[in-house]
Image (cartoon, rainbow, N blue to C red; front, top):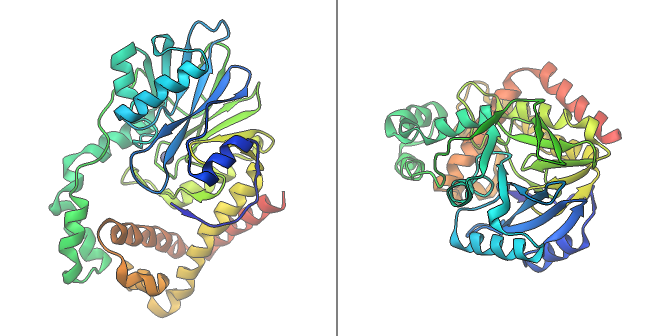
Length: 354
Ligand SMILES: [Zn+2]
């Protein structure tokens, strides 16, 4: 993830903003009637916690949790503590909902399910993505070597890329009790959430809209400052970049909602933020499109080297893989033609104006 420093959003929680700036975990806070935000610590990396949401039922007899976070004793302790502060205990957990399969969102779901018997809810598409991501063939040299060849990766770099790619995934399998498709309505007892398919970050990512409260649970699809990226788990036939841009534009009807994201802080100003994210990615696509007349059918490696600047030679392992993969997705979009790129750019600037 990288920050672009653009501030188009209006933070709606001074506490979450202050915690982010001081590097502390935000305290549990009430977001709306029967809705709480709590922080779920992440063990390593630049993003140090997930924002999880606790949705208490109308009769207060049970609650659901959206994106419970990393599977670790530290996070389980934090969850116990946060629930205690808002007068709840884990025994009353009835439903676990995840926006997508990443370990900082779905991670601890299986542990919580084993402890409490709570049902787990995930999108049908994301279930397929999870299966694909866990398949051993995906990490075999036999499947990755042809990719490296197609990308034009020099032989000297192939061994380190193969080693980085072969590492086992940091998430495990889980069988959801309920799988959702776009538009499905989830009744959580006083919280009616509509599933909004937002493929891109992952192939089966869902946002959830609470029309009654005017809230959009956005997972990692839209964050207030960070670019969460796209294509971080998808099916082979997916087109993560065009999907992501289209998904950003599909949120227009929630422009007036308060956004409850998976990281950083809650905010208003969804339209402008979605347009900024679109523009950011389209600028990168345009830089690659500008090289097409010169580089033509050259492999991904050549385009990546030219567009990454002086930091390119220092990239290795997973980061080199990620740079190549991102370049490939931008190149695919650039090669799909100026009409497609133009239409997306126009849509992004229309969103910004609105
Ligand atoms: Zn995340």
